[in-house]
Image: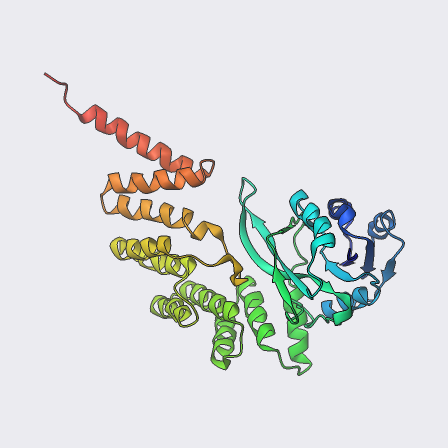
Length: 367
């Protein structure tokens, strides 16, 4: 049976740390916590679960902090979590079982990471992360921000999700500040850092700059396939917000170079045509989205709603605008079957009920 060290870095996480550690339970044989400067009760809470609580002076480098925590681990494998992560019961029990069943040649285990949820608690943003690593392999975190351990060795993928359940927003501008500090110091950004710097610029509303970095990232041609696809989608978003519709379409279609069409790219094209009032052309792309799938094992960012729910909702709108209310209602029924509690579905339900009521009033009496 293998042993597992949970290694975490924390700062001012008194609201969520106990929730995280309680969810881990017997899955971890050892807990290592590196505190990067808490001024609340975080360390006090941490010491209820472990005596391995260390201070680490924050130097604007997430990898340095995580590598420090890893250096204190003594178990066979290392598991990492953020304080606002939670292990669902299925995952916790799966990890406990894995301690007995993990193939001995395994170096790294990739697990799904659910980071956003709809009103019913279903994940709407998920991707895979390196989550459990053999300590003896000597894995190291890379990157001052949006840090990563590049997959290496014998890697397996398991369907045991970790849930990111934030209760407070990330420190505003922190990641962007770190990136711009690196640039000011004359440091070159790796392809992955270029991609994430562009995304931070986008979050900050600096679409013109973000588009430039995304173009640079794609032109260099050194990115991971899934990051390349996402860069195309993000570039299209930037260009669309800048009013460059044709360029935005070109960016979406550029994603087809890296893989077969993904549902999100097809919906993006549909949104651009729909926004221009070209509902029949938009419907073509939403229909195509229904026939596409992004493989879960691709590892990249994935919103499952793009597989069926979003295209059905948009096809409902398109056919309604085209005057084909029967077809519009059929797509509404498909969307309703997927998410009956969704507010937009409820709105459409009332809309079609109104159409039926109006039609019944207009229908002449028999006889």
